[in-house]
Image (tube, rainbow, N blue to C red; front, side, top):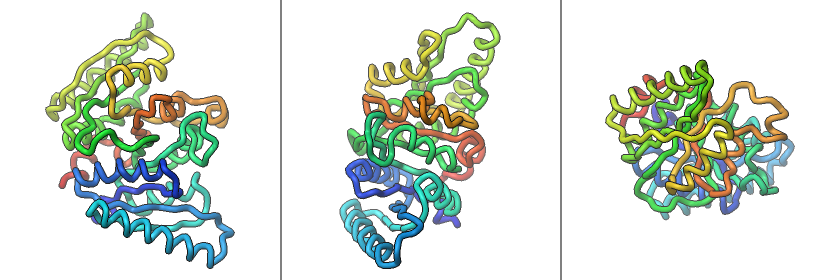
Length: 283
């Protein structure tokens, strides 16, 4: 399964945002030596002819882009829904990363912020969710890394180190200010943990403080201010149905109007453990 472990999956719905996702996947694949797989989901009741036509069409897309980018790009068609089948394929293939396009909070297409979040939380691999193609093919120069009191914040360190090492990124730690002593202790504990690992891995970083409350909005505002290339977040455990409808903070960040790419790491995912990352992502 070594080859599968180095696979980047791009959910493909034949739209411009899927093309944007592929452009980001190509940028990452070139740097880390991964293959790319385009994954298209069709309805479970689709007939054999329709499935065959989609497979042929997707294979042509993969072949054309493989020649265009001079990378190995394969294709896969799976039956089901995007909410279950994407994660099922990603988990069974032990993919390292998923790069997915979304249409933003106001979009009416298939993958809005809330729909994207429902797909993401079922996956063991981290997701990078994009709305536009990358600004360049060289680096993710500035990464925004918001931290709060939750212990799950520690679980995105692997991704921060990965991006820092491969893309020579600068990590901007965003810390919220609070007068609550208990919260401040937990936040500082997470901050110290992050700084320790960044220093150990020679990753450049800065610490910035923002007012307490509305962390999602502060994160987006700061990312826009520094022209960030990526926002790195950890998803909330046990997201409720109400969050999908009313807007969990993660979904708000994912569909940000500045169209900044967002990397989502799930708690207890295969990528969340820094030690596993250090052993499993070497060239």
